[in-house]
Length: 243
Image 1 (cartoon, rainbow, N blue to C red):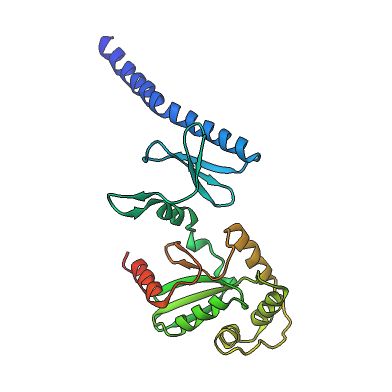
Image 2: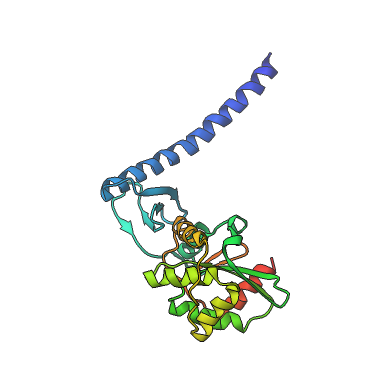
């Protein structure tokens, strides 16, 4: 009986210890959430997580913003934490993690596909035809090799962006119509078809919190918000390929 009692009591002690450790943390995180939402005046907090830095709490808002506060929400820090030992931007690394997606979940049938060389490196981009930086990106991509590009037409800048996107999507050769416009300035010819894919892309982009173009996704789900120079993009692509 004694041995049996010991075997049954030990797990209970372990459970109590785990609750003693986890319970207060969860309670504090909930208190931080309530404190932040009380300050904001709306249920705007998506998640709260205690960090390993000076007792700070990471607060992720529903608009995607990341800020820090203490356990009583007596102050808010809107900025980056830099680890002085590793010189790592902890906030940026966390933002990259939070903004990553499941690349396999992208509806690639709603994108314009281009294959350069073997096409073993893969990216997906969300682009507006009237976006100047998208045109710079197109010139960079034109000079790259061994890459498959999925371009999601994402007209968010103007009504004209929507009409251009629809005409490009309805063109007989979508890739040619797209590159003709962004590389050579050849306006896509008027075309008529079911362009619902473009509208669905806008809905998808909003779900993914894409607020600007170009937005690039690497094959591992990493998000690159905005234009990235060719040399840096090549390095990012090779980094995914090496994994």
